[in-house]
Length: 209
Image 1 (cartoon, one colour):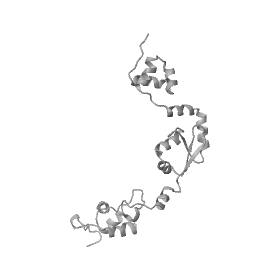
Image 2 (cartoon, helix red, strand yellow):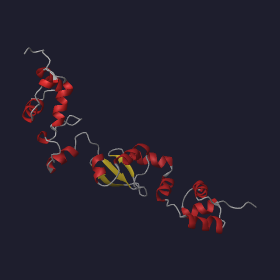
Image 3 (cartoon, one colour):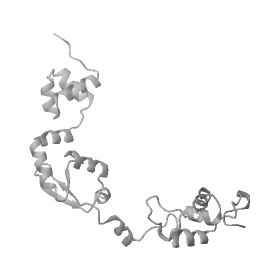
Image 4 (cartoon, helix red, strand yellow):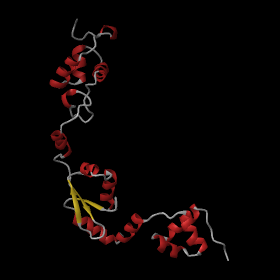
């Protein structure tokens, strides 16, 4: 058979795990290189690799021993989690504006029970996540300065600590006691606009004089 002679589908022999481990993993050949050597389509080679569960991860990192689902050791896992490019993150108390705790990376934040995406958003916007301010290590002073300059710390804390009242409680103060939106806002620790939104949500309206 000549080098460039195409092998029809019915004449192809299934690839073995040993062949894939040798050519694809050990020698680091691409699926295209393997396909050219076997005179078959590249897509067929990839399907054979996938059939045996020996494909590589999308980011190019090898699965341990080439077996899908292999559990890494604690040492390997720590090495993967603490990459050199990872940026340490600090947690800042909104009341004292002092650093409470430091995390080695965004992954470490996630493992401690915080939502990584929400923490990332809080870093960008200078907002709160789980009741704390967040910043990259080395930029905590700049973040605190921005928060102070905006003068919205009390407002942010008020929004975070706000608890929606039940319809019965809201109706008692707003309708029965006939308190204004500003008075109710002080009771429920929210903005007067929130009171108007609650009245609309609970379908409550005061009688006009």
